[in-house]
Length: 261
Image (cartoon, rainbow, N blue to C red):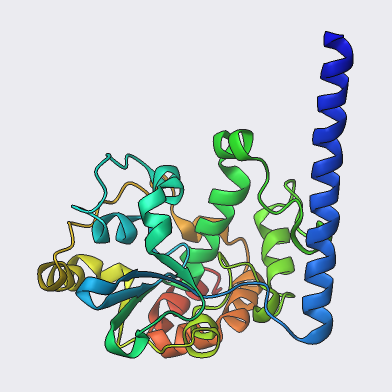
């Protein structure tokens, strides 16, 4: 009986996984066919304080969320994974439009797109402990278009072929998210690279905690992931609005100069 029970559970689990993959593929196909979006904008809203954060993934969003809920959440949030599993944070999170948005001060943080796409790759393709725990996040995305075996170069080439409306939030263009997808244009757009200058004023005004840097990736230079000028140009063309509108031209030129003869 135990063997039959185990076989039944394995079959049920396998069927569910395959059904979920099929359902997600059909959803993405429908979105592509009708011109829809795969993602919705995400906000962390503190209604009593009249403040909301438009989440830009891979731009210290976990650290910012933790700082916002300091004093609200009782348990210690030790790491990146915990913040996304916290029930109180989930209760404060809204996807799409939220009530009284015009009465809230909405802020967001953007990041150098050349380092952001590297961070996305490391987090989703090279964090093997996370993959072991939760699986490969893009296994069902666009019918398996992204593969766990993809090199960074292959990942870049594929991402550069995906329009923003079908992009996953971790590599969607930031300008597109802020100016096209979000129902509310932020009142304040800051750069992650300057967070230690800009965030203390937000923290003091709204009673946030300090920004912890538990998700700051160390031990590598993002520029080393770029192996050619062609790859740099590919990313530049993909995220040109991010570079130009948010002031990352100097970072682009410095990275490009690594390949000047």
